[in-house]
Structures are given as C-alpha cells and as structure tokens.
Length: 339
Image (tube, rainbow, N blue to C red; front, side, top):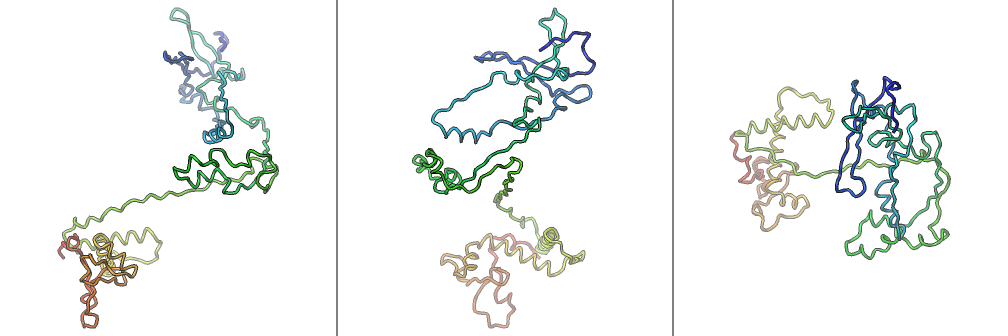
C-alpha cells in the first residue's frame, strides 16, 4: 500500500473498514486483516456495489475428484497471497483507501491499497481465456462413442450392489483401452473445431414428485347429512371450475344432481377407507377373500364403482337401490349424521 499525502487526497474516494482477526492456534497466519468493502457510504452505495462480479473460474469439485482417478500420484499446490500479486490501476486506487496509525500517539494517516484486496468483488472478477480483452476461445473436440459395458459412468448412473463395488475394475481403474494407444480407442464418430458458445445447452428440467397421503375429510364435524352433502357439492363445483374452463353456467343454487353426486363421493370415500381390499379384488374381476366380513353379502361394484350388496333380487319389482343397497361400514362417520 502507498501513503497518500494530506494535500493530495481527493474529495471522492472510498475508505474500506477493516479489522484484525487473531487466531493464536494457527501455525501459519496468526493475524489476518479482514476488509469490508460491502459497507455502504453516505449515499447508501458500497465499493462492491459498483463492481461487476465475474464468473466462477474454479473447477467444480466433482471434476476435480474425477481427475484424481486418472493418476497414481497427485500433487496439489496453492498460490500464496495470490490477489496481493495483482496490481490495481493507479486511477482506481482512491476506491481502496484505509485509515491507519501505528498507535494512539501518532496522527491518523490515509493509505491506498495497490493490489486487489480480499473482501472486494474484484477478487472474484479475474477473467479466464482472455474474455476481458475480447479473445475468442476455440476448442478442438473429438467425439467418440464409448460402449456401455466399457463406460465407468454407467457404474454411477445405473448403480452397483454394495458387494460388487470393491471388485468393479471398470469403476476403480477404467476401461482397458484407456491405457493403450489411441488407435485402440473406440471408433471415432465426429471431430472438428467448434466454438464454446456454440455448444448446445443439454440441461434438462426435472420434476420431482413427492407422494403425500391426503388428509381425511372431517365428516364427523357435521351433525346433519343434508348439510354435509351440500358442503361437499360446493367443494366439487369449486374444484371443477378451477381445473377446467367450462362455459357451462351455474345457478346460484346447487342442483339436485350436484347434491346426489356429492353423496356418491362421500360413499366412495367411506368405502375406500373401510373396504379397500375388497374393492381392489372386485375391480380385477376376482372374488372377495374368504375371510372378508362382507363375503355373505355377495358384494358387487356398480357403474360408478360403488360397493353394493349383491343377492338374488335382480328379478324383483324393487328399485335398483332397494335391490342392491350401498354398503356402509358400521363405524363410518357418514352413518351417524341425521337427515
């Protein structure tokens, strides 16, 4: 950093707040200076607000781990004080000022930081591949088809049984041809020079569905069956209007057909709760189990998939509902409301 003489301090500039972080247990850096370039000025704008955030230039962790599999020995390194080795143009150093003094007895002085400062947006704005100077990157790519049986990626995507992982040479070592000369590699499909911006975006949108058990309709809250049917009828009408744009006009009052359909919906919900196994068997054309409590009633399914009593009254003069009454479990709440 460079000291700024008092008579040369410009009116405009940015003073970065900073503090010391002391770590006694550290073996390398016991004292580290932290700069807060996000601190707003009197107009509410900070130094970081006026800088452009560059792209992430580090490789993804997944690709780094894959490269570790290619070699027997790996050497990792680190550039010490990397950002402090990048100079900031002198015309912009007034935006990296700090106040400093050695002790309470000395006057406060102004300094300008000459290099990229850790804690500013500029530290993330180091462009790669000459992007800032308009240099165009061209990648020479050779595409080859790798058979599934020789593709280590299939071990990950298709999965392996735990007992097979330790002996999966394809995953741990890779295909045999990868250790040989290029002439033994899989057949070439296409090659050529393409620009990186011309590469197609193959990202796919994936929708994940989470199964969740539906809450049971609170039938027991209603003391009258008539009220219950009307409430369910209004719910069905609202759902129908939301799911489809129907030109059918509804009156302000519920129709008898809507109330009857609501009653059938209540019966179906109740039967699904208490006679689930029997309904599934009848839907497949099978007979109910011999240990079923409704076996003696010869249950059948009507055109609306409602469970009804069978019997031998088919040729009688009774109505259809009288011949084959609906089956409602004795513990079902829908049996209790009064009309």
